[in-house]
Length: 240
Image (cartoon, rainbow, N blue to C red; front, side, top):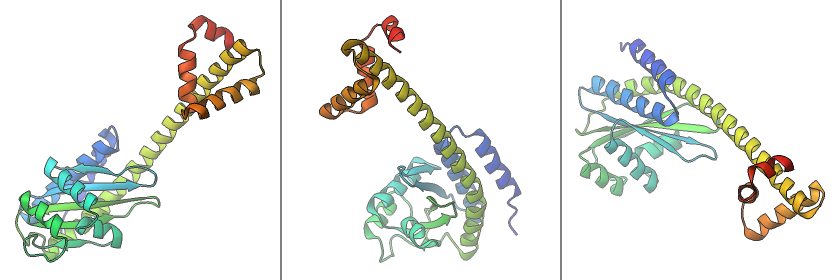
């Protein structure tokens, strides 16, 4: 029976050390490649794709080749990885040269020196999904035992990834709040400038700024920054 304790510890170390979600995904892919290379006794490459609502997909990889092949599959919209994510089950491509499916993707695999791939979904919380994509240069590398090991690894890795996504969401929310507060501050300062220049009320100043924003098809806070940038600092202090 496979001992996953050391791999679980490495995942925990990755989670602590990773600066952001991309760094964590890269580390996860490297670990996945190492695990499956050990299981299959073949050099395996790995990519992992994370999809979140209202966010662009994030791809990590054990190598440039793995990430390129994963991006090609995502662009084509077909292949074992895409199907694994859609059907929520492991999908195996035994031999890219013999498969009647996904002809364009199989050509890309063969050109990169890869003959077999295995897509394995990971269970995440609502609003997020992820899939591991394993690549082997030798056809038939992923035996039933190897597939079972990949599923077990996906379960272990999925727990760490769920926590990584939670941390990322918290950091993004904090950054969004900070940006919103900064934008609010610069808009208030811009309104102060308009009040000083036009002798109007705060609401009238905001309406002037909003109308100028609409007329120029420019975001309100961007226009406010331009306005404030043209005012000396000492005058800004007087008008806020």
